[in-house]
Image 1: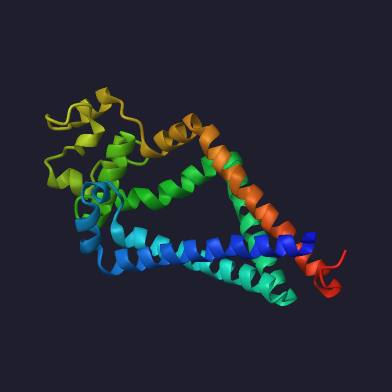
Image 2: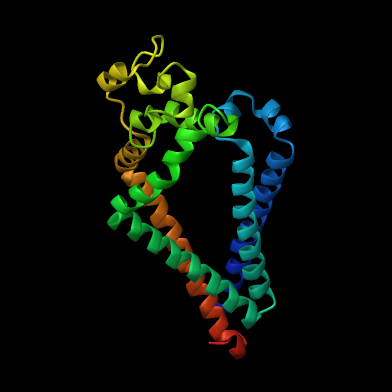
Length: 242
């Protein structure tokens, strides 16, 4: 088996796996979005710790759809030896790769800017919707419970909020070390609970090796896919003969 034929077969199998995986994610996303109650019944306690299901469903649908498209383009492009499909596949992978690199650079260099932007977006939600809208409350309760944090920056995000006023000038129990007592301002100050943004950054730093390893693995796969697709693209007219 020549190099061209081998890479062609590997390209087909690799993208077939991506296509099938994307299809599974797409199906699960649609299921969760349309019939989340059945999903809850099947997965029980495991599902109760996840974020709000409609949002998770939409996320899975988007990721699944992207993987299905990429898998289809790569598989059909290699099978049919279509230069058009291969160059589209290459271009999409390149765009995703560049976007990931840009996001990583922004996250590393402009963490403070990201913090400011996110704070501008998140703080009004905590002030106006936490305790009022069940989906927002559930998401933040899960986040604060899992990360053991309080608010986006700290407990002051809830000062004069809807929740604060409706609960006799107290803060969510997550903002205090002992949730059996009313979480007053004095108690919240003494508890010194870290904000969820800072806690998330701390957690990511603690697991930097795992996060970096996963990111590096994804980048290697994307680079390999681009190299193979471009190789096939360049050698199609030669009939795979070297």
